[in-house]
Length: 258
Image (cartoon, rainbow, N blue to C red):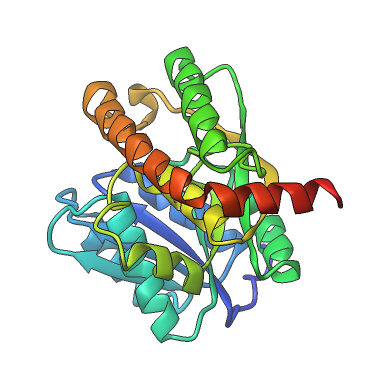
């Protein structure tokens, strides 16, 4: 049996979860095998996962559990986690989904890149297998095109992947002054706004697997509702893009000279 990873005082894993069921426990176990500490933010779940994780955390000092009384959305859960992490002195957080889609084996590699590039946003770029729904794959291409337009193609290879390492201070700065980025709009808007903020972008591949319902897969994505949310988000970002266009053009010109 391998030794548990040593505790980091700067980087932690944050897993937001809403009614993810048994997959959450598998995800947490996989993440804990790779990193210490791992915090889970229970976003108003009614599946009993919060109580079970608190029981496990009682004997695992590397596991933290934060519980929100009501469902507030993925972005709100991540914000709750990074605010608490900042209060404990952490500087960076790797966010990953609770449903087992992301390969936990990539955690240490992403963290190492972040430690070498503390002023960078480390973006996961999905490597899909045959389980990926075609509609989801095609849909993310549309979102990626818009996100790259809004940042003048400065380097967001994937705008929707939830496996990322964020500099906590920068993420809080863009979220705490906005009423948005609290639900499914979080991943895309965070990537765009952090690019606008001047963070370097590092893209790294990560394997993605979609689990079928009979395998315990859980998805709260709703094509109609969430695509309307994304459309409104891109309209909002385009307005911000137009205001920032001169600065982005200058940054683009400087990057092309290097």
